[in-house]
Length: 507
Ligand SMILES: CC(=O)N[C@H]1[C@@H](OP(=O)(O)O)O[C@H](CO)[C@@H](O)[C@@H]1O
Image 1 (spheres, helix red, strand yellow):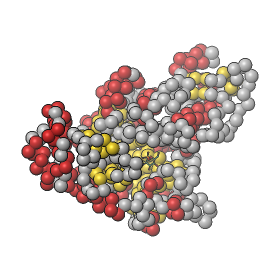
Image 2 (cartoon, helix red, strand yellow):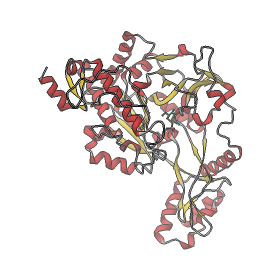
Image 3 (cartoon, helix red, strand yellow):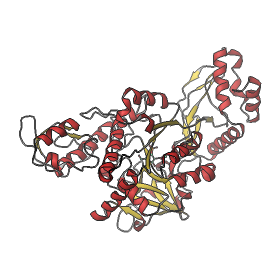
Image 4 (spheres, protein in one colour):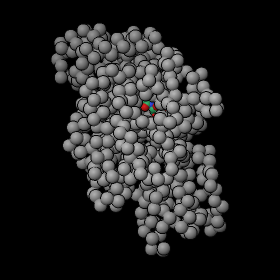
């Protein structure tokens, strides 16, 4: 830790002496906390960070149109697609993925450093329970999907494989996430295969380029965006850990998508089969203003233009056939080879773009009183995970079905979209479809048949029968026919491992 004199010198060089302005009023403990924080800030980086933030503030307009003119859609023939591929091809990709998994060459990495501000909960989003009959949280669902896909690979190849689960947290989420996993015995996974690490925090800066103090002895800090991944991989020696385990392929995903297919064998197999070093799953955008980034090309390089950075007119452009021109919606499911990540870490990380978020950042005024601003006063700079696509030698996009793979939890109930209710409905609708396809018949509480509805509205209503299938029983709808065919299933129906055993007995 720096001494007071060293901290003072460091801050002076970066034009940030005001950080110590309450020094005389601090207790010994409080001053230590502040010195601790200042010690984490590297002088050149701090100078550059504050300069970049001030410059960004002076020219900030989130959708300034400079990129829009250069955006080109990804030609459809360059996008692999679940919808447009035949069964055999999908099977081939799935087999390739399971083979790689069985050989311990695949890991998953969860981006879970965000604060869930829009959802409005004070704990990590992964701990959220959307109100399924099982009351499972997002973390538990994800853990169980890992177990199931390991099992599918093992059964097919006689292996005993592991899919390590790397979890990137932040100062806000590490403690509670660790505790939650311990309290729940890692949801049946081996703790040594769940590797949590922390992304960096960086200071929030005012429009004048000065670091904001949120307490007399505390700098207002925020995580460095999900693109902070690449520094965090280096800081925490994660690439070395992957190498030690023999992991070659990584599936990176965001915590909030209840339908996420962990280490999806079809996606992994597709990317491996195409010799890709980098890939992204996309869904057809639902409407022009949908808050998803779009995968496109800018000056010949693949890129995602985030929803906050595209102009509405560009998002509304349509092709002659009437479809949205920029329709490849990013669902934050990415594929990377370890080799590509090593290149990014060694050569490209410092070139990643800094995105600007103008926010209301609580601060202490000249007298040391906490002020909650009513209008934006601060700049947070963030890196985005997808900004490495441009460095890829072989990038692929893979279009998946929204109803099977994408229903994010972003907002609190009451908002029209992407809420706990819509997430729950998407999962229940999917499981209802799987059960019907497997030949199950639903009955209501009075044992009266519930007429099947083959096209149920995904987000606007509950499916006609409530059916939840544990990921430990089925990963993507497979293996259900032998359990459910011609069976009467009373709604609400919860198919967990015990129920599956009972159903096998009655067959
Ligand atoms: C920086 C980043 O990864 N942004 C992603 C991410 O958005 P958030 O609003 O940050 O959760 O998830 C979206 C999908 O849910 C995706 O469309 C978008 O591009």
